[in-house]
Image (tube, rainbow, N blue to C red; front, side, top):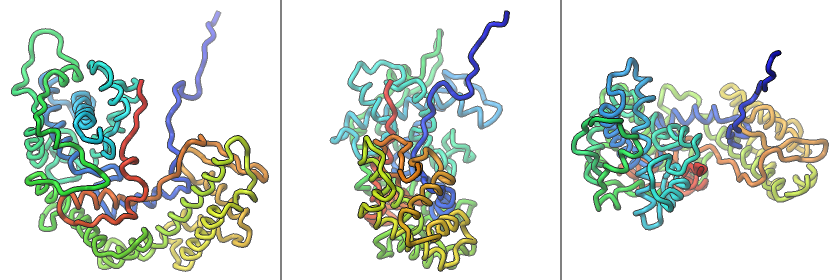
Length: 455
């Protein structure tokens, strides 16, 4: 007799998905972002975390060599598997330290995983998973601060050894030494007889926080301030130096030119800012597509705004399914669709389709019949279902508009092109004093705080 058994064709555990990028333009936006702010990401919003992570890499390496496998792995890829368990608790203890000692208990700062950390602080602070669910704790390598800054640690000169992202390089060691004035690891790392300690228990027992560490924390995002002394100089040279003669010079110069152009711009919205950037960078040989930048930004913003307005209208209906005619009769939705028509006409008039076929397809979809607003909305939703990534929001069901995502989900963010992150870092490094208000209109502080679910 053959014993029957279940065969699962999908994961037993639910996989989290984000309700983002409703029109599938993220790939184009990322292309633009990598040109304007190379080596960064939307998560690299606080230069202080670069310093802290360099210290975490140094101390994590020392502990791993003593208490981990200790040898030289066969490849750089295998280092991460062994060394990161010694780095992760250090990241989380900096989050805990910030919650405990900042006046606002960490609010408004980039603190990935702060929710379970608050729960852990309110309990007995025993070593373990810091109140994380097992799956969330496992994924912290990607959702935590190191995951957000790894690309930058690899891209910036001297931050990590050979740009591999795991062992601190010359500049990384300098920053780690600055951080050491505020928190100390063991004076020496020695392997004793018996079983080696777990990373969580080891760091809880051995870290020595100084009084000055109450001032040396991840910074307030809404009011980025200039960093002090050598920390600022090291980070400024790594991010914005224009006299270097190495492979990173082009990226450093590009970041600096973009910061200077934004600082001079009088724009009050993203499309106008993109127009000013196109003018400022017009002599760059690799940016022949710059004339399309403003019209793409206008189309992407208008498309996202129309989707958000539609989503808010459907969400407010709560226990009933609204009709298409009802939704387009709402002033905010009607205005958003009108602006999307204008942005589509601008894109079409500037002949931009050769640069982005996806944006061209969106504009053509909208312009098919501009006199019929329900038709525009219906085609926009169909475009979203065909090209959007992440969770789908809505479907057209006959003459009704039916939600297929959780109604409590909020608006999708506009494409930021890494510019808020770039300008915040520049201000911290003393390169500029400017931080345009409209670059912060998506509540960057809230966006930067990854809220992990507690166990």
